[in-house]
Length: 254
Picture 1 (cartoon, helix red, strand yellow):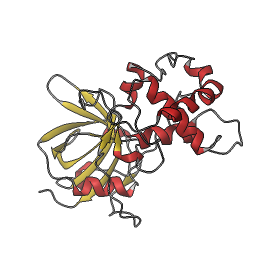
Picture 2 (picture 1 turned 120 degrees about the vertical axis):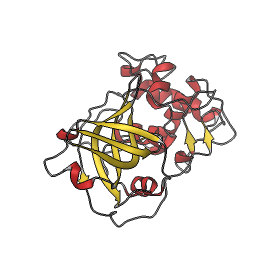
Picture 3 (picture 1 turned 90 degrees about the vertical axis):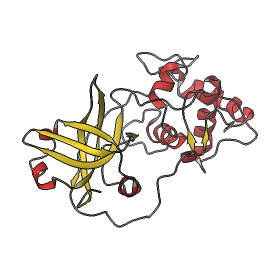
Picture 4 (picture 1 turned 90 degrees about the horizontal axis):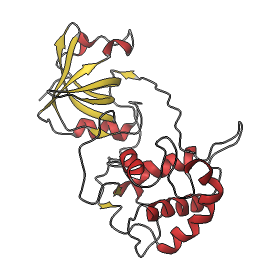
């Protein structure tokens, strides 16, 4: 059910922001340990889970080949993301659809019940109110002891100053990596969040810049402030970003 077909689309946008909503990226105010679903909701979700999900993910959510929905498989895939990201992925992609079938395949209330069931099987505590579509982006998925550094290979967004020459380019004065759901750089809330982020102290070496597009010439953006999306690569002495998307967010750096 949850095997993802990954299509990487790289967008190189040097212009300013696309007009659209001014919504800001929210700072999650709750976690999955805060009682974000109701026990009766999770109970309702067991039967549709068995009917729609168990074939691929197992009756006990054990999964196969890393697609488990309980324990470490679930946490390492979804930690440091929000319930919005999890719910969107489930409702927009699961279960698999036949050609021509539309989305969502089942009702939104049933998807919420299934997700509540999954939360219950991960030993997250039930609360007073059922999980609803409102406020999902305010609920952080994390271990009980708090957030942890993003894992190697995580799809992230950073912002900072482009420096370098030739084949050696870096983003300096950068902030901590932020987990993202897509390599697409056209999302306005993400652009605005990157634009508004204060300068940081981190430096990231950029890897695979040459695979972006012949239209992107890094020397034309030297000293500019960029939002960069890509996979985080942790090394003993540095951090790299395997670049999937770049967008200018400022002509000069602080």
